[in-house]
Image (cartoon, rainbow, N blue to C red; front, side, top):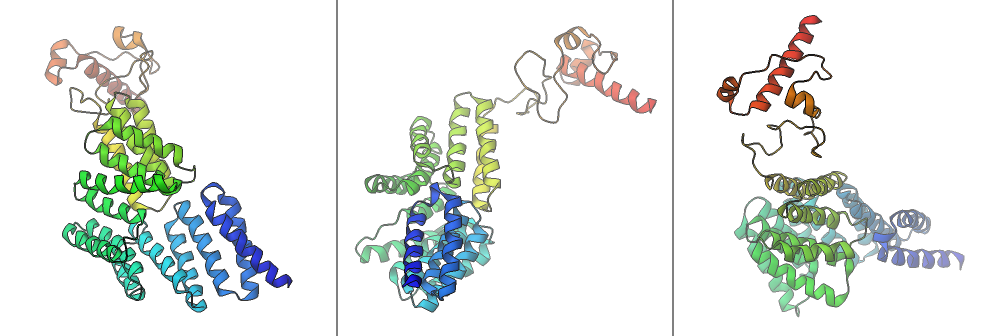
Length: 382
């Protein structure tokens, strides 16, 4: 009786914890470990399957795709032993999706998805759910016609079965169209998914869908509308929802940059890059870097063609910080009037006609020559 009670309690805790996963990572981790120990002690394959799936969900939420895939693989083994096809097919669907965003090379990921499609061939729904990530992988190779064909096949299967709906499938379809340079098509798919999710009240997928929709709208130069969906995502996303956090910060950074808020936009974009770096979701890494690049490109071009302020000497008191890796800000007196500075020397300053021949920026040329001379004298002295 006690053993059976242990199993029932563990199953109940697992079900509750997985539902609240995004808001209780550490608690979920402890519950998963404890439940796995209970199920192992009783040789319960179904219980072990669900415990491994919880551990996979934790790893996935934290952005550890490789660890999540390994946990799902272990869970699939126990599902097969227990004869639980439904559990097995659901796990294999997750593994197919993980192959798209994780560290697995595209060629290998395609083989994984093809193998999964073969394993689930007895279930039309599972086959359809595998075709969408497979389509995304083909799109990553630039094979957009093949990708759309696979998506069409998957959608046709679901239509025949009465229009079974999955918001995650719209994500793969939108991913394909964004790579293909058709953000308007991606927007159409994502907007339909967003409206359905709003009706259903599913906040976790709603947050991710909203950020993807913001990116698709922003790609069509409608920043104010995109800003609305960034706000929706922020309100719906849990702090542990890294995907929504990264894409949301990147999208909003581009919006702010378009309004002239360069410094704040760069801060947000770099935060997104740092968050993405804590994961092994390589597609997320790429998205974050592309958003940072877009923010950088939104800056005005200086007279030498630079966007990083390297052609302009920074002066204390202006409120503009020096570019990382450049010289510290100069004091107004030493820069404009030639007062001695922390180097302790005043270089022979160029005449205006020399500066004109060097490119026309008198101040920049004078400052550069002065500090180069100081470095040379320091080296000679040593």
